[in-house]
Length: 465
Ligand code: ARG
Image (cartoon, rainbow, N blue to C red; front, top):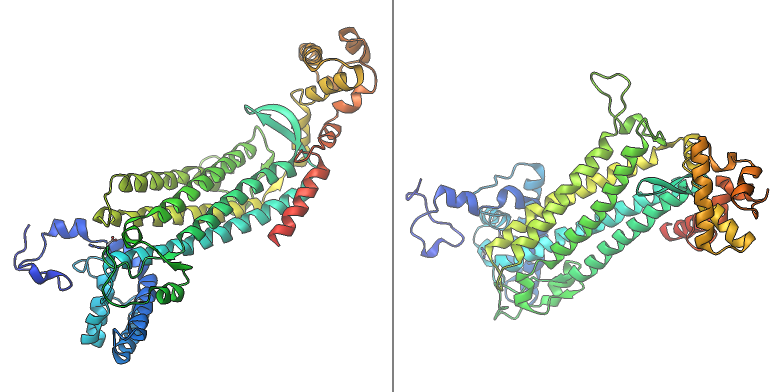
């Protein structure tokens, strides 16, 4: 296995006589995945070179050659004809080695006053920051389609559930707006994380800072950071920005999964509350009648990858002494996969919701089933007959049992039957037994009354623009 004839690494091999074992190379190299950081790596290096020139550490001539050469590397990578090498371990050394081939000697000066430790921390922060921005944008798009559905369905009654048992009538718009609130919190978590991560590690060097008179404020500003990170050990050794991104992603993923689960249930033959458009369904190769909600099922399933990524990176980080350890190279694949999965799930959910057809008749019929206005009846007894709520609850329970025995719904009971259970019941009780009256009465702030839902829709339309 050992290949003693292989030369040692050109970037750090000064004290090595032989190259690494093939297995060592396989476990050590990250280029197969961290090549995804090429744009951030080149951007960071260009900012670093410009700063080295501005501070007189590098000649303008060398810095220009480096800046130009890096742009050539960028275009080669973008054109897909860059020879990535596993022997060169990672994106940082691949880019630098190619730069050397292109511009020669000045390439060796680029790594002055920095280390791969601050370099990778910077590249990865830039990448995660872009992903936070993308998540914020995708969540905004999803919220907009939810608000549009809520506006249409502000007055559509449907059963509200607890324990997946019919509880009280609610409006479809209210149900959609519940998710708007959840996704809004998800969005604010990405916004918070973005603010906190926006400090620049570049210039922390290996761990202790550098003896060169660099200008860290200059590189921080050039890369769009708010400020340089204030402690060099912290700058190279924490990945809490990635953990925060994964945590925000995990919570958002759980929200997406719950919504996906509802779409699966609602589109089933037993519910038929909604139907998914052709664009978001698949058929069965054997059962011609089937229309399967695969996208919703896959959102529900893929969310496991996001949660797994969070657990994996927390586990990587939990036992690491300061400062950098190679363990941290394991941060990237987890975050890449979680980000890809989340973005795909957000896009699919947005498409499904935008195209969703709602079966309002089914919703309304289901809303009236299952004694969903029993609470309204109990409330009527409290309000109109002065009963304590507990007694009203008991009387209503007796009426529900009677209706159940007769195989009918509460409004189908005659006034005589009602009277027999409680003499205070009169004709006006029937008004509260209708599902529309029920939802219209829920006027408390944040309640399901169509007026309240419309007020929230208007608020969110204003906020979302
Ligand atoms: N590929 C490495 C990573 O992702 C870059 C940093 C390497 N630093 C070092 N001291 N070996 O973490």
